[in-house]
Image (cartoon, rainbow, N blue to C red; front, side, top):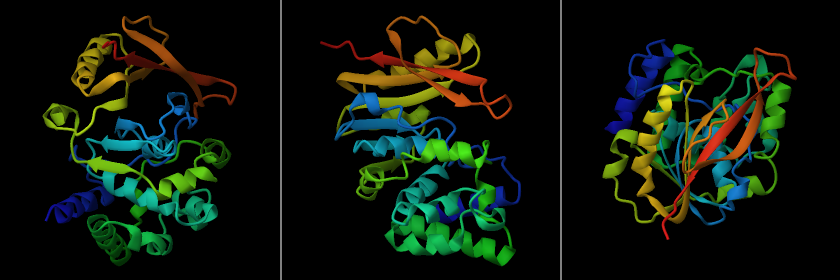
Length: 277
């Protein structure tokens, strides 16, 4: 059974073995200000997205968009489905569940909160977490070892998540239109999609100019998946670059935990728009 194989590999991470590139720790904590997709007007629009961090997918869902997402990390799909269902509980309990600063004694992902929503999960996801929590309880090890550590203090996370935990956002997530695929960038071209996409969110990060050519080549794979007026948010950088067929669609400043509060990094996101007539 595929889920059993996933569980076996994930248990290895709990004990420090991260040698399998298909199973990596999950990014559930925001690392930038959310709501940066709002300019796309995504109500009932088709969106394809890499799972860079789980908060980005939650953000996309909040616009009532129809989201198809994928990841090279096989652990992402389980935790994404879990966090979507966590919006069925009140905000404070959600915060207790995901944030170390809120949870008692520094523990996150408490089983008592998981038990509140487990019946809303699909069979595979519920089986995965049931087995994982049972192993952790028997072995006295925290499931939080599967999560990338928080980078920022509690008050910064308060600022980042205040929109996606309140009001209409919760209602949208409870009625979400989400498909999580077990594919990665190398086999995306072999997938037959029913619809073309209005937005494709890739958001690759690059640090060297030599990376740009490779990123543009990767972006080519996705252009055939766009509708006539579709857009690709292809990559982000800390440099303002003048690139053919691309424009900067947004700038996002976010706090660097290793600098003073007033010394923010600025991130530039580059967008390709389908020029097809």
